[in-house]
Image 1 (cartoon, rainbow, N blue to C red):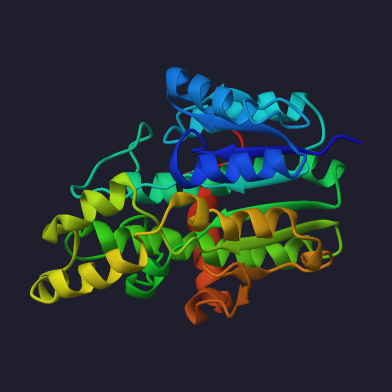
Image 2 (image 1 turned 120 degrees about the horizontal axis):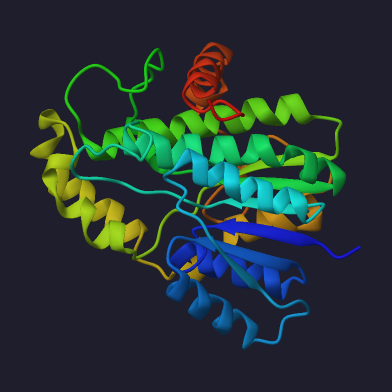
Length: 292
């Protein structure tokens, strides 16, 4: 049976390199992105490498929960899905709302992959053994750990809120692995470590993205972070590709793949079942599986 893969935010950077890696590994890849022109170019570049199965592009603005549901409907109609890579992510210097009136960082970095994954579980189960790969970030270490509401108390600081959304998604990922254990659907988190992207070259240079107490030290912290994220996207994509395809992970689940493309211990807070349950309650409330 032909193996299929879906890669969100796959038209450029780490997502495109991930899609290319999966196509090279023999999967029939669908690339998801907002811009049809960029999508066409991305697929053309992948297909120029003569993969076993031509790549395709599907347009979807994953900041919209209705768009996520529509994408899921299209994918479900196409049959079994072997690999889902939730690569979508964004950091905002200023607070923004999504199309659904939800704080945008939480919507894009957690609710979108959460909802898409939940809706695509029937296709993933049908393709078992199959894999889910959620892209995480070292920014979880500076995250607030309160998930009683979509927005934590205090002012908006983009880096911390990005980390909080990624922490929510990591906790969800590890809990999902437990839920799906024994179904043939394996679940992984992949930490790319970073690359020189628009986010690292732009948003991270704005000191407003961190809390006032960190701003005096931010130039030093940022330079250290930038040194670790200055490599090419092709290297940063390796953890996701490894998690999605490597035979050594057969039978494994609930594993974090680190920037060196091998398993690493998960961030401890993400393993707290109380935090995971709070994330699950909030996610179900904000992103119900059926539109209301």
